[in-house]
Image (tube, rainbow, N blue to C red):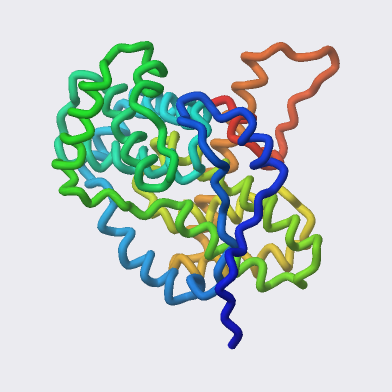
Length: 311
């Protein structure tokens, strides 16, 4: 087996454009490069380890039950966190990790802090420090909340969150499963250029759907592996470039990877499609519609960007 010690990071055109104008809340600096996907850190062994660990980071059933009574406040807070992560140009792993930290903190304390936005900002700050080299700044988070709290309050909230969670902050999220599930889907393809484009599109669509599930309290009690598999399965449906036989085979493979029944995976995929249809229809009703435009009631194609969904 050949071993390469060369640095294989590639700086694409998109990262070059982003380096010219750093997002709001960033300190600037050199462009961050991503290493190529390493197949040795994928496979069933890694998935089994993630499945074993994910149960430790699930919120309590009492917290889930209390949230289902009034889900609007949590969804509003999650949507605000998503907007902040998008405006600050955070990595796609920051938002789901911040929501997981927020749910676990509220599940452990069962008491609301003085400022919920300060709590959400503190979770974003911790998640950004864990997943990014150039993390979001405390001043930018205070500005996003219209200075309803000061940086000193945010740092104090950060210490409270870390103490409550006992510094166990590296939670498992759906974004941790998606690369491994996508690698399995890629193995079922032919390995051509079209498959590479398909995997790239599936990753964007799946990230979007997983972020939508993080905002929706109906998916609060679902394991991250099931949310990731259902999001990917829904993305495969939305693309519609495969026959029903191939889609059925890939759905069975995803159900086997996340160790769940195929009927459960199909049920959550339908729930995601229904939630997506609700988001898209509410966005069309709120925005101006052109003359002769019709709202399609069939299964929608998955959007390529989180900004295309009206959260």
